[in-house]
Image (cartoon, rainbow, N blue to C red; front, top):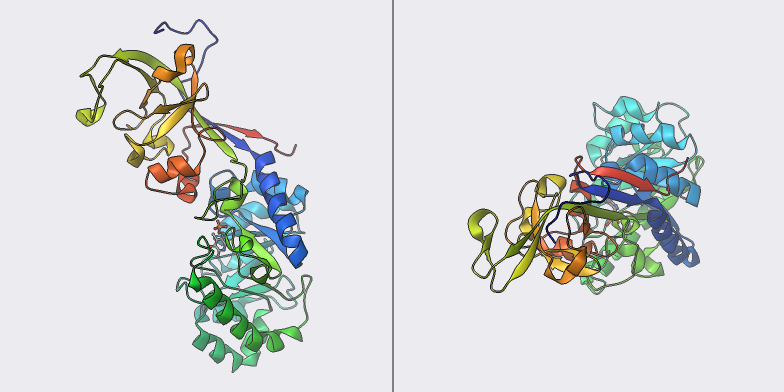
Length: 385
Ligand SMILES: *Cc1c(COP(=O)(O)O)cnc(C)c1O
């Protein structure tokens, strides 16, 4: 039971498996969901592809048919362009900043113009004859990035300025799309339509560039709100990686990562024994504890202490006491013979899930994915050669 492994050598590092076949399957789910509305699924690969690796994710999705990608800043776009070749569109969500302006032309990046100052900066910097286009981001209620309705009016009064920007995409972003019945959804959609009605006549006559004049409003959740929210393009992020887009449940997307850690020690606990820093767990009955080699330094959030679980041999193994930097102690009593040194416990993945462990740590899939740490041994499945 507590014997050292007679089995092959194992490393004390956690393993992170990234399944690009799952990412591609999730992209196809969205592409098929959007197609009847005449919309296409684009891929949001900011923050290094939500932590999975933007280049590998984007190359795989390009092969699957994805033509439009979104990153947070120009450096992320510059890192992506050589991997994708000249064809796909890469939008930079943060827009052109003075320091990054020089990256847009050489790397063929399309800016998202989020504020009046970015409109002016881009109008001044855009190369003559540039046909990569730009997105105009209008705010419809999120009050994060995007021009206000008043700023859009101001821009309409300056047709020359607008023309110099080469805008061929108009976008906005929903605040409450994870809740399909939230009144903000329809309210934002209504404002988007009203702004579009004013902008479209000013944009339609422009040299359309290679991509035509398009709109986007939905992200992973909005794309599930029905055809009225699909527009031409949906910007799919967390759903690609298997995070649940809606608070109301469904659809069943494929979890694209698996975080596993080996058991370093198995120890019996007697009633009254405590576990971990602060001695926050006390055994009430004889238990078997498995100590695994992963901790908050690997991105497994400490807030899941005493609440989360791992999965060993198909059984849930509750976290006992506090998660520490490099170690987590689990109750592996139910796992029987599988509870042995060297055995791998799944902490996130197809068996443990992604949403539930994230929620038990007071967070959500977005944060957990983007925090998974560099100490993990990474293995990628389904990567293009
Ligand atoms: C991050 C982001 C997305 C993707 O959102 P998900 O909920 O992950 O699908 C889409 N649009 C904008 C503007 C974003 O910032």
